[in-house]
Length: 109
Image (cartoon, rainbow, N blue to C red; front, side, top):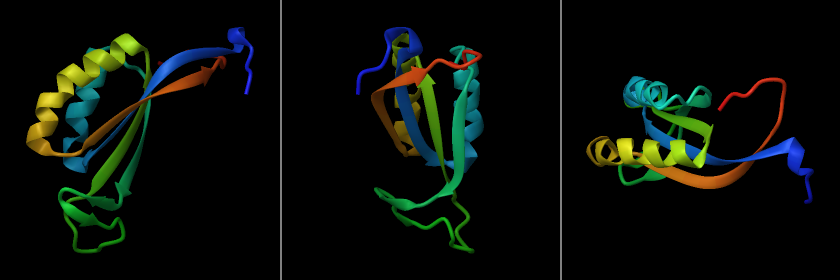
């Protein structure tokens, strides 16, 4: 697909899946790096190093959260440097990919 260059901004998409209880820490890190916008989805399920996690499990006390962040490459690099050591302790997954932000009325990254 060919898009007009003045209609898009190339960014990095960072997806983080962690325990819901660690979300506040990620929010603080985002604020400290001036990452102003993100989307999060609570109670996501999946299978990984900690086994199967089903969002509909009534008795599962550990819930996962998916955080989706669109930010500049510089912000993504700083974010990864900041959280990589912590994620070794708390677990989870962090994925980074290229994305294009379609310009809207306000900048949210």
